[in-house]
Amino acid sequence: MKLLAHLFAGTAIALLSACSVLPKSEPQQIYRLPATPLPHDGGATVNWSLRVDTPQAERMIDSSRITVQPQGDTMSVYKGARWSDSATTLLRNRLVDAFRDNGRITGLSSDETSLQADYFLSGDLRAFQTVYENGQPVVVIRFDARLVKSNGLRIVASRRFDISQPVSGTAVPQVVTAFGQATDTLASQLVNWTLQQPLDGRDAHAN
Image 1 (cartoon, one colour):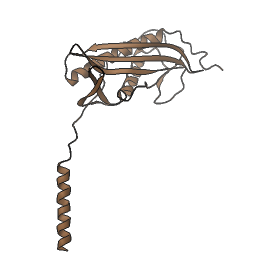
Image 2 (cartoon, rainbow, N blue to C red):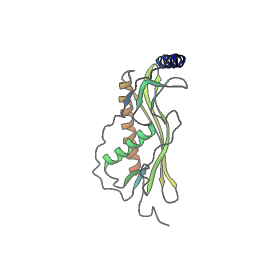
Image 3 (tube, rainbow, N blue to C red):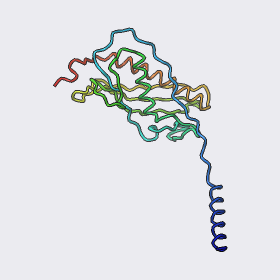
Image 4 (cartoon, rainbow, N blue to C red):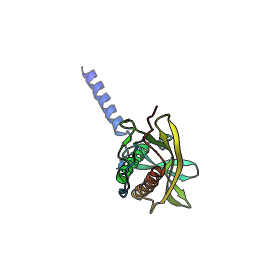
């Protein structure tokens, strides 16, 4: 019995020692994507509905890490900081809010609910990161947008949006603020572009 007790005590001490040398998890600051509401558009509402889909993106972008490109093709992330959700989900939600702020599309939804709509807005998020240009950080967002008619899945319009927003410093909160400003610009341009298209909901579901 004494031998077993000694063995048990030795095992417990070894386990405690092992636990004490395990690396501590890095503390994380979680950031929401800042947003400024768009002005309400007093124009007439449209006669078609729109679904905003979550953009497609490569794995480095489609994550909750805040991505930075310090030089060349090298990609990294800001340590100890992350978004409250994946970048693609944050962008989708920001665009939905922008269309709601505008007010002209009353039949608005996202792929989170999978409701039927006359058209859907999809696209590829090619860049959502900080890039250093001449030693200064700049937030870059590149989004290839597609407006697709649900009936027949036909692309009716497409456009690449390139947004660059200088960062006022190198601290993460300053970077996050610049991401919010860049996304506000993208949302405004994308809403205006969508509403300029000659879309019609009367025959969107015609057989």
